[in-house]
Length: 258
Image 1 (cartoon, one colour):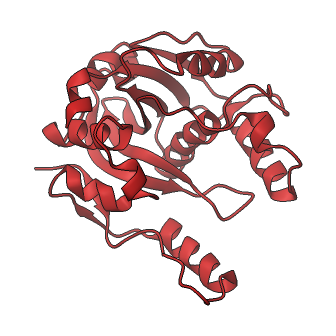
Image 2: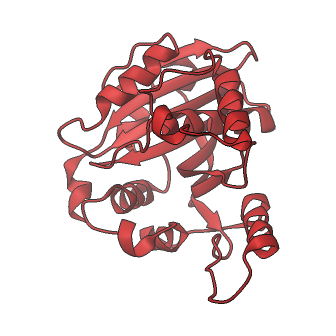
Image 3: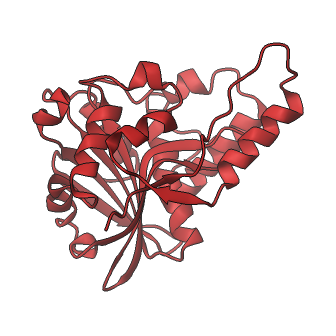
């Protein structure tokens, strides 16, 4: 039985020429974030329509397609991911309960959520686990803090303060760190609090064969007082009581051919 589900209906609304975007856009975003009805996938191609820019992102050799085919092969936790998370005792016996592609996590400071490549809810003998998955090949982790926070609005100020507070990082953070790693990790923590999970994790599942952008991951973990390694998990307990895990999973090259 598949554990991978998708949001019922397209989660992003197209703009229509001549239509006012104000209230209608805010309503569409609110509906996308708050949608609670999901349906099982029938295969990896179902993931395509959930992407923000499917024609651009759904290509052989790119992370979106590689990730979808890899995860759909088992309908569960891919073996390379399971091998890596087993290095954290709290995650070693993980059973996947629910797996949702392109899952949106609302964040304060604006209408735009964090759209995670995969979010899963699992359980171990110790309790529930919330995990976000960030797929990568050659794509970067997006803008640095200095690029994203340039001439910040009040909303951006509020959001970055929230991210730093949740991660227990001093505000403002190092300008060279990647903003995406902040909100992807916090997405897992938010869901952990929502479901009363004891553990939260953010995993980078990369299919790059040259270790692209690993240095950015290492720098982010260093800001958390952790050491990043390939095919390993680093963990710490947050003041909230949640144990946070961050991992880098090196995926097989064969998924770059699908």
